[in-house]
Image 1 (spheres, rainbow, N blue to C red):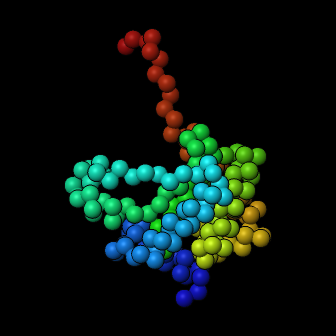
Image 2 (image 1 turned 180 degrees about the vertical axis):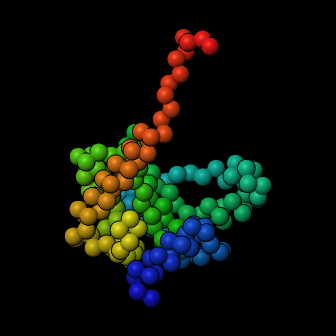
Image 3 (image 1 turned 45 degrees about the vertical axis):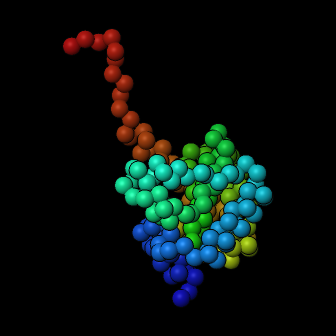
Length: 175
């Protein structure tokens, strides 16, 4: 299968669940190795600690089942940071960025993203798929196109937010 078709198929599969099937020791080791490399190269990143007992209670499953379903590794930056989140699952890695960064800040955030993605490509053997552009990215040349696409997403998000704001009700008015 060509890399683009494989990326699309994995994205569809990921929609059904991050880690389908039982744990595979090699995949678990790969995720742990990549998480360690990412946190070493970017100290602000830290792994999210899942509360498996709370997940199990909320979903009416056993804690063991919660651990099997939620065995991906989620790396997050600091609470007041740039919002980058990296999710390492059995066969994929996902990087998400919130749509709140304006152009100057976005360029800096994408420098960080590019660093993380390059590590995943180099050390994880991943092809980098840009779902917004629907293509396999070449990290050497596709930065501007990805940043431009992100800017369009920020503008669209702001537009939707402006259209859905409810006018403030005057608290002093009686009727």
